[in-house]
Image (cartoon, rainbow, N blue to C red; front, side):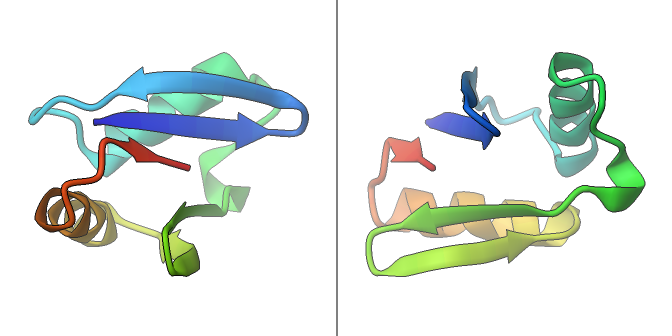
Length: 77
């Protein structure tokens, strides 16, 4: 699965492996965009029919992965 991660006018693509967790995702985003800080970051995702689903911790991240797998979705905005 690919995550299309957007901040401002920029987008990066992250190839999600089974080992990736929420904290690592936050770390990647903070390294990519140096002005982001984990304590003020708000992450959400969209899939068909569901816009702005929040991801605040590893449980939310794992639930996102489960929904994506069940629906056979390859790309998440």
